Length: 400
Figure 1 (tube, one colour):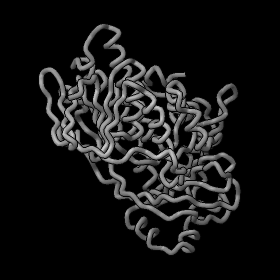
Figure 2: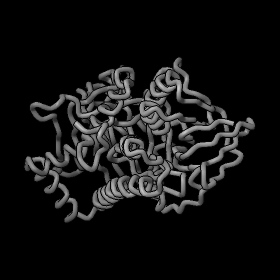
Figure 3: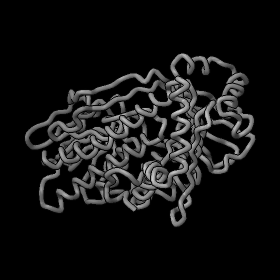
């Protein structure tokens, strides 16, 4: 039987980040993961990527993992967003005095691997991979977890960081609101004839947004093509040559002829939001608590900020000589992060609905709005701050 401060269920990027943050505070932590440990020998394939913003970079720098993550990432210094068949567009470049990099496109598995390599160096973190939970129960004094191996873990607090189909959320019967976006995301690595020039691009099409995300090689990008379900299935059914033609046309040849460099994968897009993130000594973070449309590329960042916020709340409890499982503190975390998640979900829904309407008058208004936002410094700065992760109520470790 192991006695610990915190048990984390889920060894994705959010769970591993939280473990590192808690270990820095001297807390003893166990990580439980149903899958295998990440392999340091696996090379990034950039099939599934995230756009990390400067707020996340600042946190990873403090944790000592950023140099190794950045070594596998592609920094971008420009962003270009436009609406197909319209004059509306907006472009971002770093302001004078700011860091030149607006963000970094990173392979999801590479992020997780580098976090794991840092985790195994921490003497206060124990990892249980290839493990499932056979019993999870709360008492007045602790949370008990029994694993399929027979091991029993007792902790003051348990964190569900186990993804969109969270076992912890389901076991605790925490209510979930969800709706289908009626879209699917087609992802792949593509080769482009023209160099991407360290620019992240997104085109709003009538059937959904297409993102062209720069990779370390200037002639390769990762695409996330979010399309209405029927159109996504049509895109998946095309042979490679026909898909290349469709992709080049959809991108308006902004990078010249495009061609597949990997297989295509498709993922359904669904909004999920837990209306309660705390149940006694159990807390949810990241995808276990929320997921939303990827059109702004902020899902990974938001989940990592959940981890940072929870770690900050627990540190404040410890500094005040109070228990980390105190209800008042956990509910303060819930209020803080629910507000941030609600704002992001509402924003993504507004973008999806606003750009998903092909009425000519609305297209005209959208185009005019993008042009105006591109010319008004105050509006553009606010949009830039949101893209850089410098807006909202950030944890201290992520502030600049």
